[in-house]
Image (cartoon, rainbow over all chains, first blue to last red; front, side):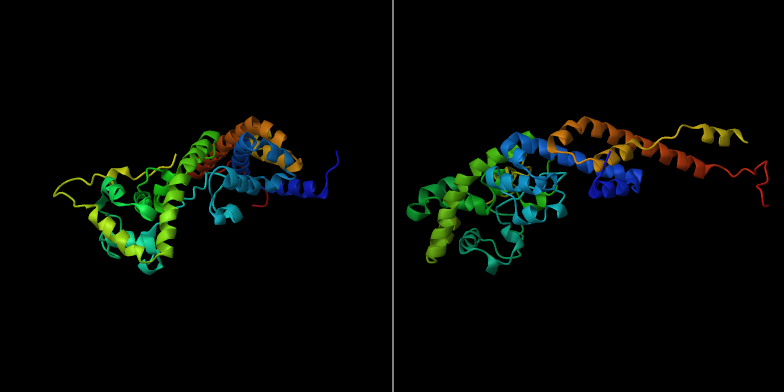
Length: 245
Length: 78
């Protein structure tokens, strides 16, 4: 039996491993195999075209991002840093605006939170948001702001779609292992998230292009804030989706 | 020769199954199809390797916890 120099080096390196390191290495290999199984299911032709096994994971992640659901750029290019082999690196696409400075927020976001009476660094800023009467908001919104209810739901992470409602801090604790079913669920949810994003994006762009509309947005939102009842439960508090899959 | 020493000498030689599988994978240039077909074997090897590691750890712990007993034989040089 003849070995290439590379094979011989790999073989010699494996001889110096401790049993514990060998177990860890096999578990990493099993994770890769699981991903290859998912790769084969969704992109069989691309897998056949693969020239080297070393490129399988980055190619797979690019394909997932292009054809199934979005992944953050840092995941695509620095995947080895983020435990990608063990779990699906979920990448929520909605801003956690309360983690930012008010002055760094999009003009539309500022208009909405001003309308809701949320002052920077107050209890409200940190998530104790007032509820909005979205039905009333839909009745009051028209013309270029006809999709305002969708856009406001996006700001408050209350669209009912996990891609838009997930909060970075919460989902890091709920990553799922790679599986065909988990990927199908995420891709399906992403398909439903896109039209919501398109509609809300129109409003964001309109307000950005017409800054005077920000005041109107604030007034509309303010008129639809539901005043909390004394000792009453927030009717929307339970709607935040915490787990993606 | 003490019975314990004899048992140790007579014990069959073995290598942790995870190491054996790791060497097998490292020494071959496996393609995707081959790697996928090896999955059950790798799973078995990883599990068996893990179990053996636990056994060895238990044995080491037991040996460490043993009370010291003076030997019947004076080692050469003493």
